[in-house]
Length: 301
Image (cartoon, rainbow, N blue to C red; front, side, top):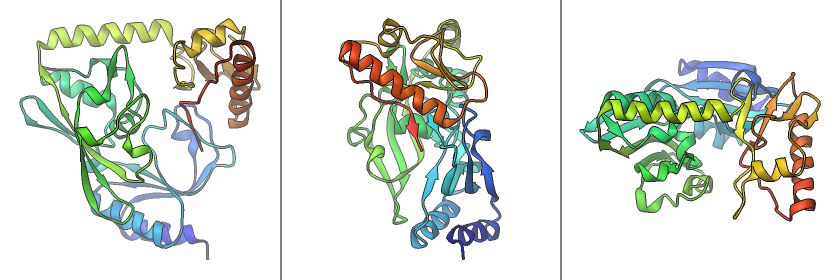
């Protein structure tokens, strides 16, 4: 018996939205990727714990997927279970006048709007980052001199052994595009954020400014996974790629954006292999010509 069939049957019993052989190009911002054996939307912590336990007991790989905005899924798909946090994991609430609790499955956009409507400042930098709150904490997302580590107070999680825990700010090990959750195998379930009271009009003006900057500089009109490479020390990935004459370079349907060389776009029905081969060419040429070794920010499955 296919071991994923056990998970599929359990998810049905638990009344989850569960699908077999789900195309992952429907669930990633790149619009690329083959099918996942099982795709499950999970609405609450008890259900998540039960499904993860069954995956572990059955030796089935599982993946927590947010908005799929920093992910490239193989053309062969994902052999295992993809879990999307939904329901209570998307709820946002005020704890006190400057503290927000947000489920990990909520979008950064919805959190930014909530903060704006609550007259709270500190998240303006995140307006326009197309991920979930859990994913943003996982990789310490940042832009325009702001980072999640500046506003996150604590993080709730589910361990692979089923234990429920919490990490306080000082234990999160948040650095450039990283956090303790990259290595501790825990699933982020919720985040507490500390912000500052502010005039909503000032907050809105900042958000609009950052969004306008994004729109003018980034290829938002094409499917992509955002910035592909981490910023190398002492330089900028996009500038190095442009310096090497790679702006507009194509492999199949994948292209180094002509608008911002740090982005690879799905210009015309690109495959994951198109993107990967283009990444390799960029890395090789940049290293040969500048000595910089570009490291992928993109998570490749």
